Amino acid sequence: MSVMRLVLAPMEGLADVHLRRLITAQGGFDWSVSEFVRVVDRLYPARVLYGICPELRQGGRTDSGTPVRVQLLGSDPEAMAANAQLAVRLGSHGIDINFGCPSRTVNRRNGGAVMLQEPESLYRVVSAVRAALPPAVVVSAKMRLGFDDTSLMLDNAAAIEAAGATELTVHARTRRQGYAPPAHWHELARIREHIRIPLIANGDICSVADYHRCVAVAGTVDVMLGRGAVRMPSLARQIRENAAVESPWQAIAPLLREFWGQVSAALPPRDRIGRIRQWVNYLRQRHPEAELLWQTIRQESDLQRLEAVLP
Image (cartoon, rainbow, N blue to C red):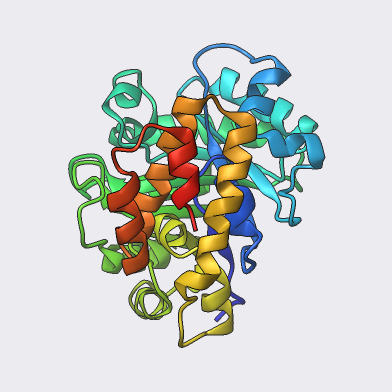
């Protein structure tokens, strides 16, 4: 079996530059993927890509040195190819293409998971992006098992591979299933047997034990960590070290204070409060101490009072 590769997932509205910075600093990740750039029908100015992926201004890496790959979402092959060229020129470590977003707004505009209903559309986009970039540049794609069902799952994976993708990440749910448990890792095993490019598993990997169960079922050691890493920032390092004991709250609490400092310097007051609540809401699913903090701040609107109760 190949050497494991651990990837931090793109999570729209959650894992922005601030959380990417903190989570990748805990170690264990091979690379991270940015939030998606929504491509419609034109080439964006560089400031748009810098806004979504500020790491491009520092060699395409987080402060701790983790490479960041810009993710593009769209169905126009020419526009996707042009923006992929720009992202790589600005410093992106490869290009990731989003065929998995379940958002109704995005899907209504022919982007994300809705494209899984037409394997040919996946082929056209990936092929255009692949042709626009030097052969050494990685072009990856992320998809779900399907839109309403899995009937086109293997066709979609095959189309992405045939178009020249370097690797494929699959969230082990359909669009209809959203994020409802469980993730269907057994379907990933079918995809892995059907393609030759590396398969990266995604979905419900929230502990070291989950990682080993996923590997056993899906047959790939490569995984993308999303909400599991938000709940447990050291998860990638724990997986890499095969750690039996999770990081205690005492190791996570200082990150909240650091995160608060970052968002306070970058965001208006209302957004700061929203971001800290959002992260604590995820942390409380794993840590009883975060539950106590959540009950204190969930309705707090005063910046000074909120900051005073942070650990």
